[in-house]
Image 1 (cartoon, one colour):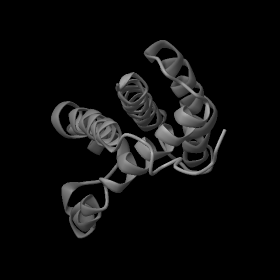
Image 2: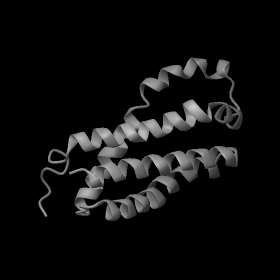
Image 3: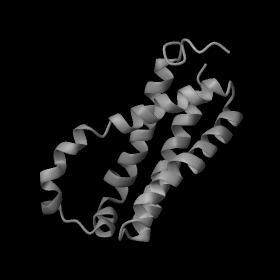
Image 4: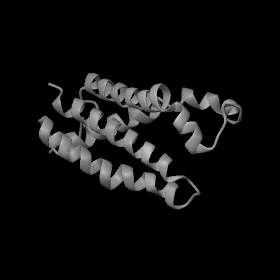
Length: 137
């Protein structure tokens, strides 16, 4: 398989839609539905977080990078259908994303509820992006 065009040849509309879907999952979980629960689990107050609000400007970078990474892996794996895309995406989530997220939990005093919330977000967001990218025509 040629190595050129791994990113350039990808469908940027699918990548963009996947990134938006991932970001939307995060907005629904952390912003619309469970924002008070997140505040409680994280142990922060709005006042404590106020100096860090600038970081929200950086937040779109994460789902964009994830969608690009998924597109590269799915292309290299020659995934061309939704079912296979979901299986491969789940494996990426389980063996790379979840395992990386566990470092914060294991090596910090983080509460299990926050890990659960983040795990659900990362699973649903990754699967949504992977589904869009792998099923995009």
